[in-house]
Amino acid sequence: MVQSSNAVKERSIYNIWDKYAPHIKIRRAHTDMCTVCDKLISRIYRGPRDDTGKQAAKAQWEAHLQHAAEQGARYKERVLMSKLQYQNLDPATKTFSPIDGQSAVRVISFDFAQSVEVPHHTDQAGAIYFKTPLAIHVFGLVDESNSLAYYFFTNETNCIGPDGTSSHGPNDVLSMLDFFLKQSDNGERNLCIYADNCTGQNKNRFTMGYLAHLIKTGRHDTIQMHFLPPGHTKFSPDTFFGLLKRIFRRFSIDLPAEMKTEIASKVASSHTFDKDDEPEWI
Ligand SMILES: [Zn+2]
Image (tube, rainbow, N blue to C red; front, side, top):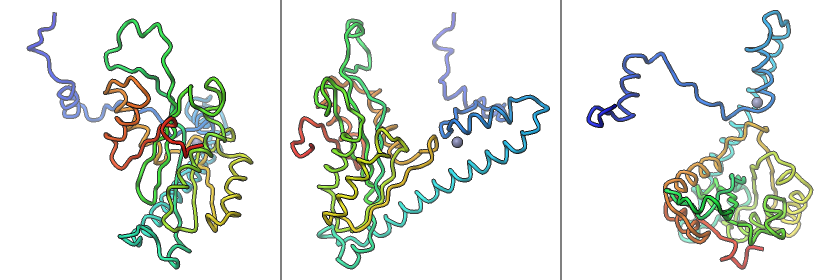
């Protein structure tokens, strides 16, 4: 039996490993990978040795990765440019002058996270195991220009469709986007949106119709909508979802209202909204 006095911390084991066998690594899971990558990797590394198409597959994979990398670089570049423009905001009024506003571009990005369930206890009591928890849907919107994160929480009792249905459709996305845009105006005339390449949520006629409505009603002069290549959509909302998940795992949360206060108090530069508390959120 192992004596607790002989035990060492997990970190110590990794330190010894790093010192004496630095060449042995634990392979990390590829998160930035799509079905095209998966298919090509299988052919290149696990296909038959006499496959003459391997070279072509390798070239195809390199071109595919380069395209994804270029799109990611463009995204970062647009965010950086916008942040620089937002440094010119009038410190007192937090608005652009009319001339600066003409060229200013607000960059936002949004996505849905995996839903979480409450009540959630770090030490889950046995009895709750047999009950059905309440699913909370999490929508994250990042105002890249101002480095602010917005979390929107809906649950089965207050999402748009009856009985918890239609929680991730275009109606839901647009209701939250509209709510955000109504209260976020620094006088910029241009908007740039990055979203997931998903037809059910973002890439559809309803979203395009809503954006056309914004232009027609004079809210913006130009709007760009970008979709990162499917499977290669690592962008700011993912970072904030990671923070949310980390907090969610470490703390006990019983009610949707607690979720809102816990996340807002623990994630810096974040705002949280629960549908039940926001009459303006349609
Ligand atoms: Zn890929």
